[in-house]
Length: 165
Image (cartoon, rainbow, N blue to C red):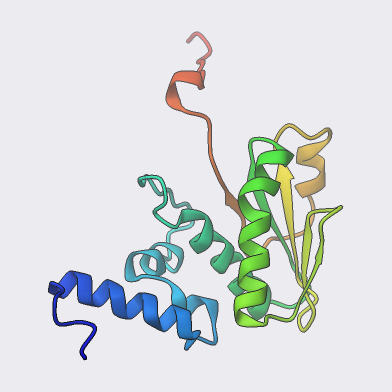
């Protein structure tokens, strides 16, 4: 019995991708990304923005990019910034746990400090909330191999002011 005979080409492609992931044939989280996700995270632009539908895999792609930076850079600090510390934890922490478990990554996770340490390179990923006290001071000083921000305020809540000429 062929499982793929009653599917369109797109459905076959998605089904094969799903089966591959179930079998955990990937050994590197980057290999599990879709082409659009890879194109986004490996784009050479210094500033990038993704405007996608819900459930498009933004958090998964960003977590993978941060882990890739942690795996390739020695002793660097990699910040992820959300509107609040709670939203950073709720959005990204489960994603990092899933990636660690699915790919058996050499990571030490400290939930109290929202810190992920790559044990081979000693690089650290921190989850920050922009509402935290002394937030900016925590990020000043060291160079960052990569940084990411999630869930920016919507335009209706953003105020842009300009000084008079």
